[in-house]
Each structure stands twice: as C-alpha cells, then as structure tokens.
Image (cartoon, rainbow, N blue to C red):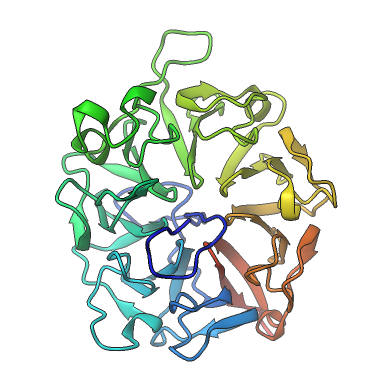
Length: 423
C-alpha cells in the first residue's frame, strides 16, 4: 500500500511498536524498552529502498543479517512500511530506508545515505518508538511525542499536519503527558497518563475512533485539521455510562485496539472487512466497541495487527490469531478461511507477538522466534520465498548464538532485536 511513491508496490503494509520493560524514566509503561537490556539489530526481507540498513548494494536478505549501527547499544528496533527506526540505550534515534516523504527525519541528500543507519536530531531522550508507512514517532522520557513524515489516504498524500509533510521532528501533543504511542499505516495513537487516547491521521476506515463516517475522507466539510490535529477518542464502558480509562493501545494498518485499565477489557475500531477486530461481524467501526472475544473468552494482554488480521497474546503467554486467512498469516494450516474470533495456536509460552501486512511473529519466553504467513518478500527469514502456513522456527547464522528480545514486521521487511547468549 504505497501508491504514488515511485517505489515497488507492496500488497499490504503495516506499522508497529515494540514491547519490552522500562524502569529509569520520568514516565513508565510496560511497553517501554528496558535500557539495561541491549542487543543487536537483525534484518531480513526486501531492501530495495535501504530499509534493511545494509547499504546501497543489498537488495534482499532471506535470512536475518546483522545491521551495523556505529557500535551503539540498541534497546528497540521498529519496522515501518519501507523504513526502520532504532533506539539506543542513551535515548538516541537512528533511521534508514525510504525517505521520499520524510519518514527518516533527517537529511539524505547524499547519495546512498538513506541505506545506512544515521542519527536523527531529536529534542529529548527517546524511550519508545512507533512507525507507519511513511511516518515515525518517538516518545521522550518527559512524556512528549515527536513525529515526522507523512500520512496518506486512498487519494495520496495528506501531510503529517495541515502544514504538510514534516521532514524534521515536530511535537504532536504539547501540554499532555503521553506514556505510550502506537502507529498504524497512516495513523498515530497516543495514550496519556490520564488514560485517555488521542488520535490523528487518516480516518477513512474508522481507525481514528473519533471521526464519523461522513467526515472520514479528509475531514469532510470540517477540513484536514479535524483529522490531522490529535484529539481525544470518547469511549464509554461496556454496559455502563462511565468513561473508559485505558492503560494500553495498539495499532494495525487500518485498525486500532486498546485495553481498559480496570478490567483488562479490549476495545477495537477501524477496518473490519475480514473479522480482524474480533467482533464477529463485518462492519467497520468508527468508534471503539467492546470485544467480548478478547475480553472474556480470551483475556488478551497484547494485540498487533497487519492489514487484514490480528495476533493476540493472553495473560498466560498463549498466542491467538483472527481475521483473514490467505497466505497462511493466521498460522492454522492451508485453509484460507478467516477466523471470526481469536483462535489459539500451538506454540510455547510467548512474551511478544507482532504482525506485518500478511505475516505474523511470536517471540517465546526462551528467546526463540516463530514466523508464518506470506513468503513473497522473504520477511519470514526462512531462506526462501514460500508461504508458511503454520508457525515455523526462524533460524540462521546470526541467530545461532543469540536470543530474540523483540520483533517488528514492516511492509516488505522484518527487524529483530537480539542479544548474545553467554558462551
């Protein structure tokens, strides 16, 4: 989903966040990377615009390859649609990949400079990252959100703000203290310390959770500012008139999910053409709706989503998938049938799940990584481009002596954060 980019079209694309544990910052959230646990970045998939970070001559890697980031100690690595963002233990941000619409947040006028990791000039110490198709966001230890790049809709560019594409970091939500950010393909979600969620970006599929369908195309008569200026999502509790206080937020390409603080209940909104919201119907949701299948039937503690499917982790470390079945992205074998509600997979206990556009990943408690789904872009790190219809252990030379901390799936590539195992 990169129309008009002048780059290779991808069938589906996804933005993502990584989830680990933070301790030493002014604000805290379980999703923040632990700065005491550092690792190396590994990348696989297609890299024709430099998103693998391996230089101008490396177009693809079918197995995870080591990315050199100036000997920095990395605590988080996130894949956007066609770019990658990495965070160091000092709170510095490095980017590489496609910069056509400012997603790297730095000058790449020197030929080939976009294909190698380089630092973004950021005001503040970064503690969490998110990335979409053409935008990047960073949360600082003071609870400020800085973002750069561009949002798109079905008709093309809409800008990051009403001033257009932003090639350098700008503050997105001044006056609020944010504790978690999440990026969809073309939307951004910010969770504040008050348990409120602000959203901005493309609203066409309902992914902002606050824009009625009649205003969903570029804000309708209310104009672009209505969708590009972050504003609060209003949500009342299931079977109650009390306002929901959230403690987590997640995003897929065109969808959003959030967890209620008091009950752990999951609410979802956005595109629902393959049951990917878990609501057992095919209606797009323009406001948050309670998801029984993720709140009562399964107690979900983490959600990530691609274009038409979602992957969930429950409180016991069990993994579930829901939504579209083509290319094996659900992990339930050769059947292309969709799953209307989350269906469990046979995997060891896991600590993180992630999705690319038509691929899925799960990181086990012991540091192994399983991947499945569409193999076309070699995002599965399997050594070939065949689809994988059930979870398969990712292997390779760079993983022989390392444990995986976290994984992130992009439009055509995958990035892993891994740490060396003691010899």
